[in-house]
Image 1 (cartoon, rainbow, N blue to C red):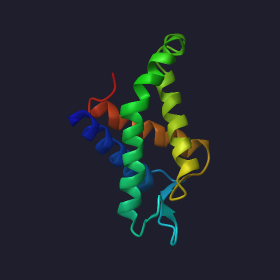
Image 2 (image 1 turned 180 degrees about the horizontal axis):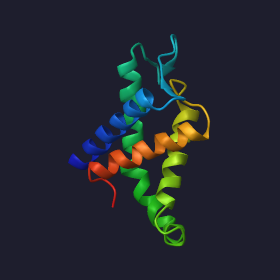
Image 3 (image 1 turned 30 degrees about the horizontal axis):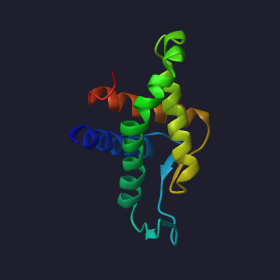
Image 4 (image 1 turned 180 degrees about the vertical axis):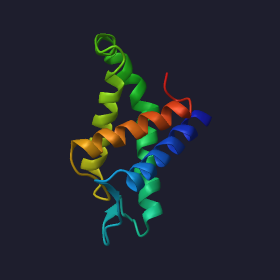
Amino acid sequence: MERLFWHIVAGVLSIFLAARFVPGASLEVIPGETFFRIEIAQEIQALLLVGGILGIINFFIRPIINRITLPLRILTLGLFPFILDLITIWLLDVFFQEFTVLGLTPLFFTAAIVWITNFFLGLRK
């Protein structure tokens, strides 16, 4: 349970840093939009929602995908998890209208922030 908490903290921190420092990545509230009938009225709510979902994905789904893609990780000398971070961030961009990443360069830097945050919090192995 503690590990899940740290994954969620890492996700929220990553999205916050990306939205703050990466040009082309933004997190903004869209008035009138709901997520499962919950209206998101403040930026902090959108941040907690998107970052929390990122943390949950990294906690539950990432280990399964890492096992499945082990041959690709070996072939790419360990760089394939970064590709998985790119795909995860892109999917968050697709599913959440509040979080937008415009182009490949902001996507790359956002994925790098996610990877670095998880690395420094000890969640990457």
